[in-house]
Image (cartoon, rainbow, N blue to C red; front, top):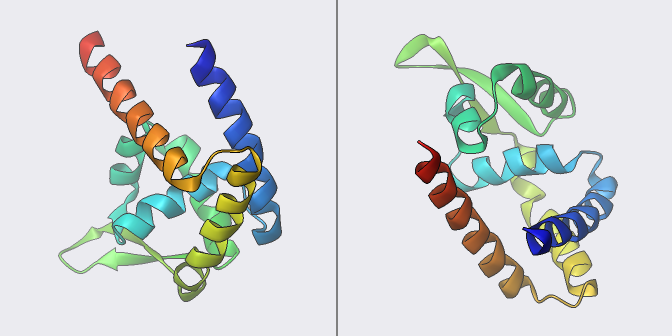
Length: 134
């Protein structure tokens, strides 16, 4: 667990430094990552991916919407639900943001591909640990 804490602390600092240019925080970056993978999700779907409630997500989504990164639209199949989509700004800045983060991660002497592999393995580990607690 010591390695995980050190790794996430160091990479989080690198990510935070990268994101200053784009005027948002690392937790907001995670939300954008989710939408870059699969645009048009409900708040409940996003919350389930991070194990976060609406009390945590609502301010994050409001800030991203206010700054033009995302848009909210009613679900055409169920107007009671709101879907969250990337805005044009959110889509067009993906490569710039990814490049800035990759640059900072490489400065930590970790190749971007290694970072992706490590994060994938950590996610798998977290999922296994979560399922064993149930």
